[in-house]
Amino acid sequence: MALHSGYQHEVLRQWQSSSCSRLSAYSFIYPIFVTDDPEADEEIVSLPGQKRYGVNKLEQALRPLVDKGLMSVLIFGVPRSAKKARTCHLLAHLDGRGSPADAGDNPAILAVQRLREVFPGLLLVCDVCLCPYTDHGHCGILNEDGSINNAPSIKRLAEVAVAYARAGCHVVAPSDMMDNRVAAIKTGLLEAGLGGKASVAVMSYSAKFASTFYGPFRDAAQSAPAFGDRRCYQLPPGSRGLAIRAVVSGEYAMLYHGSKAGAFDLKTVVLESITSMRRAGAEIIISYYTPSILDWLKE
Image 1 (cartoon, rainbow, N blue to C red):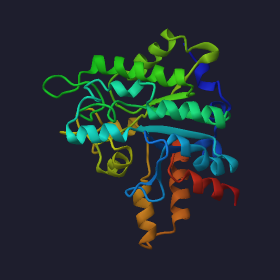
Image 2 (cartoon, one colour; image 1 turned 180 degrees about the vertical axis):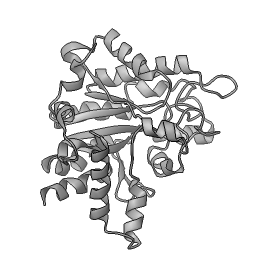
Image 3 (cartoon, rainbow, N blue to C red; image 1 turned 90 degrees about the horizontal axis):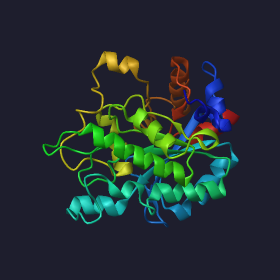
Image 4 (cartoon, rainbow, N blue to C red; image 1 turned 45 degrees about the horizontal axis):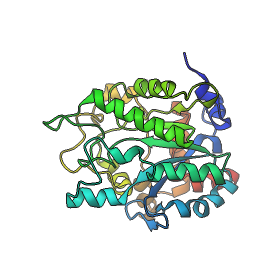
């Protein structure tokens, strides 16, 4: 049993020892969207207060957060050129296996390399999925009839995870919802020699629902499918059994707009939401509210 990857970084050790509903900076991961325009600094309309950054803007954006206690970021690569190619049916850059996902100029890989330089103590988590990089926008490799071909999908996801690990990330986070992808990724990491001292942890998204609430995120990551939907491989929102086996969540945009409408106080409802997640057993919380939470925790 390979355990070392689960506590090779101080933040990972804190995750392993977290208790009950206590809140600390160690519990939070801040998602960042990194585009292939190195100078980008663009607002995300569907996620107020959030931006897509180019690799040259990352230090400026994250330095104030690191200074006030930010411990971890979750990196999403957003290849805007790939999105344009998919929309215009220009497939020279894209293909059905998501070849740009592990290319050397992938924005996630460039972000990892830059952040390891400027913030050596920051825990770097990389989202692993194919949807931003395929010509069809789905999370895996497809059969001719458009259904998911699981076996080559998880093999490809493992290749991408290994590329991110070699770039220097501490944790790979598969969000694709393919069957058996965690085992495939762990095998790929071990075969690549990324075990032992150089081990990389795997943080699987336990639940990813085929939900309308993902709309703002898909806009931010520019990862909506070119056709069809993801109901055949993401969880059905009404499935009680699967939901119980998965995790709880809070919706950033919903809380933001509710507070703007005067329905509740933003700080109060966010802290209640994340405390409930901790009470329910969540050790790690990925939140766009992390910058605000870091301030609130100091009050």
